[in-house]
Image 1 (cartoon, rainbow, N blue to C red):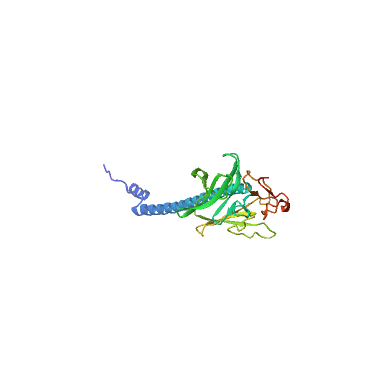
Image 2: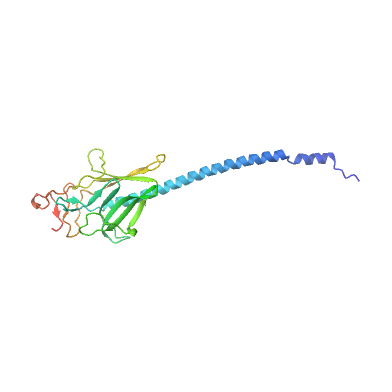
Length: 252
């Protein structure tokens, strides 16, 4: 019996297979396709991560703005006469801000608190720290805060600067530090810039201060509080006859 494979069957078997060169070319093309696909996925992952970080940064800035706006709305126009001339219990510099404000009853106890905003180094980054301490009669500067009352509002590769201005008919003229002892600013602006100039900056926060609002002074030991006098303190508060409407001492 002849067991040899017919020529036509042997030829078709060879035609249905792959040569070594064809396999190598296929593997090379497959590697190129997988490499391009992997590069595209890495680009998409980087874009997704950048967008996620941007959203988180905007959310952090939004929450910080809400807190700063609430503090400015609750700012108390307290003043003292230490050294003779009355001045507001308010300090505004380029990297710090402090004043007395009313806190809501939740989640802490209601009442006046000394509020402080300050910038602290965190490695190569900068943090904007909000601190608070219960206000006590006779306080004129922020007394410090416990770790539980120190909260970082803004964190990351940013730089911060506070500026202050009065309202007028034209564009506000921003100043830092705030120079007036006997008047509060009408506006407070927090500039937030990215440490990397290639990245986009955050829109500045601008909050309004109720500088012309009439508020009740806190406690009997407060020497003087301002009144409806255009936002300015009186040069001679002892002379009630010359006081503008609404101006009064705290112990009256």
